[in-house]
Amino acid sequence: MKTDDLVNLLASGAGPVKRHAVTRRYTVAIGVGAAAAILLMLGLLGVRNDLVDAIRLPMFWVKLAYAAGLAAASLLAVLRLSRPGARLDGLPALLAAPVLGMWALAAIVLADAEPTQRLGLLLGSTSVSCPFLIAMLSVPMFVAALWAMQGLGPTRPRLAGTAAGLLSGSIGALVYCLHCPEMEAPFIGSWYLLGMLIPAATGALLGSRLLRW
Amino acid sequence: MNAIEERLRALLIRGLDGEAAAYRVFLMELSAHLRAFFRKRLASLPDDVEDLVQETLLAIHNQRRTYDVDLPLTAWVHAIARYKLVNLLRRRARRELLSDPLDDERDFLSSTDSEAAEARRDLGRLLDRLPDRQRLPIVHTKLEGLTVTETAQLTGMSESAVKVGVHRGLKALAALIRNES
Image 1 (tube, rainbow over the protein chains, first blue to last red):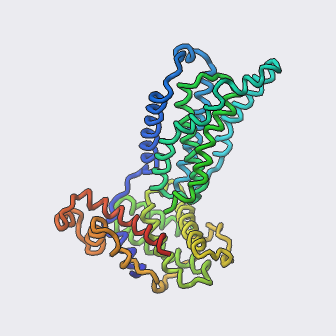
Image 2 (cartoon, rainbow over the protein chains, first blue to last red):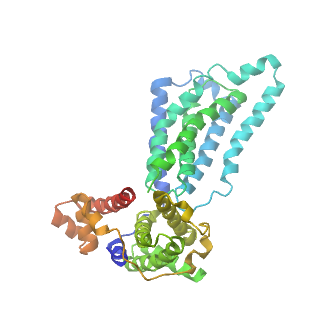
Image 3 (cartoon, rainbow over the protein chains, first blue to last red):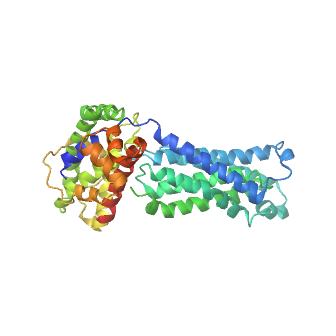
C-alpha cells in the first residue's frame, strides 16, 4: 500500500472526534477504581469503629488531605503523560509538597516527644500491614489507570507507568484512611508513603511493557 | 515555520471536528514532514523510512484524540514521530546509527520530502489478516467509500459494530506492525 493510499484510507469517513477524550477516560477509570477500592475496604477491612469521633480530630483531615493532595498531583501528571509531547513543568514539585509537608509535621512531632516514645510514634501498631493493605486497595485503580493510559498515547512509558501507579496508590491510601486507626504524622509520612510507592514502582516496571502503542 | 504550524494545526482541528477533506490534507502534508524527518535520521536504514512514515501516520490517526487543541501541534507530532523512531531503532537494536540528536522539535516542520519511496511492508496484506468484523468495516467504509449505514446493511453488522470495527481494526493494524518487525 502506498502512503497516499494510506492517507486516503485514514481520512475517508473519519468522523468527528469527541473532545476531552483523555479526561473522560480517567473519569471512568477513577470512578471504577475508587468504587472497587471502597468495596474491598468495606468487605475485607471494615471502617474504623471510632470513625465518628475521629472525624472531629484535625489529624484525620490532615491525613486525608495528604492522600488527596498526592492523588490530585499524580492525576495531573497522569493526564499530562497520557498525551504525546506534554510537559510536566512544575508537577514534580507539586507531588513532593504533600510529602514534605507531612515530613515537616513528623519532625515537629518527633522533636516534641520524649525520646523513649519516638519509636512508637513511627511504628504505630499497624506498620507491618499498612503498606501492603494500601497496595492491595490500589490494585483495582492500578488496573483501571493502565487501561485508560493504554488507549491514549504515553510516549514516556516508564514515567507514565510510575505516575499511574502513584495515582492508584494515593487513591488506595485515601480509602485506607477510613479504616486505619493511626493518627501520627511520623507513621503517615513513612508507612503510607511506602504503601503508595509499591504500586508506583510496579508501574515503573510494567510501564514500558504494557504501555506500547 | 510558525505559518506551517498554524496551517497544519488549523487543518487538524477541522479534521477533528469531522471535516474529512481537511484531515486528508493534514495527513498528506504531514507525511512529507515525517518523511524528511525520518530520512535525515535513518541515513543508514533508508529502506525503513517509508514504512516508518506509514506506521507513524497510523499512530497519529489512532491517537488523534490525545491532541490538546490548546497546545502547539509541533510538540505533539514530534513526540509521536520520535517515539516511533526510537521504537524502530530499538527493534533494529542499532541505536548507535543515530547520528543526529532527536530532541530538536523546533526544526521539525522546517523540512519536507514529498518523494515517497516504495514501502517494504504492505499494509494491504496486513489488513487481510484482520478478523472480518474489523476488516470488512475498514474495507467498505474506508477503501470503497460506503457509508456506515450501507456497510451495516451489507455485512449484517449493527452500525455501532461497524464504527467499533474500524476503530479497533486500525489499532490492531498498528499492533500487527509492531509485532511483525
